[in-house]
Image 1 (cartoon, helix red, strand yellow):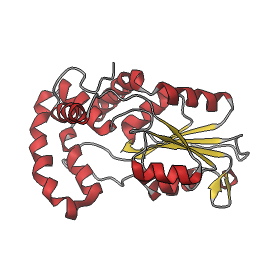
Image 2 (cartoon, helix red, strand yellow):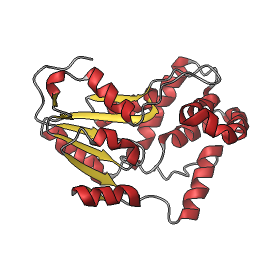
Image 3 (cartoon, rainbow, N blue to C red):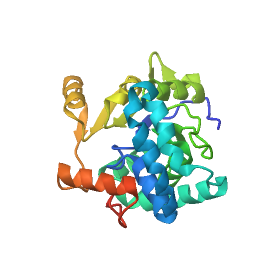
Length: 248
């Protein structure tokens, strides 16, 4: 993808999980696939069994293990599920953030969706929402533990510097850039921004937001309590229930 050398009026960087929607998309997509191919539940013990090795495997390794449920899934089927999944999450996009996307679009800003979730379905979500650029974790399912480079933290900044023209940058940041996130993992990305909106931030991020004068929004999430959140998360993980994420 190529972009004109002339910088846009502004740039908007949006995280996905927890920012545009209340959930981690990896849980949602797993549920989406396993409900259609129930036998893929058999890979869950592999993930659970290797969880104690997290200090060795780290986040990248555990993400590869988590994706084992997509073993030998044909590329055409991956693409089909990615499209249907993206359509299924549209009703769950926070209304407040959907309005922000529309505002930036009307202003002629460059819309960038940047996520640590697998790019094969993040790209479909971005397409439906009208993003100009979508960046996610590049992974090709098929192998039991597929290779990937986790698109998280500083990796998001590296990718943007590789893809966007140098004229879009000014000093250490992007020109007239606004960032949206719910996570401290995106602090390297926020360092590119002149203004920031935090979505349901946890205390550590909220403290930084208050110190820097960042905007805070708190859209309603589907769970009623921590216990309800845990129960819904387990149903998503095990592929149980019609819509434990409350997407509809």
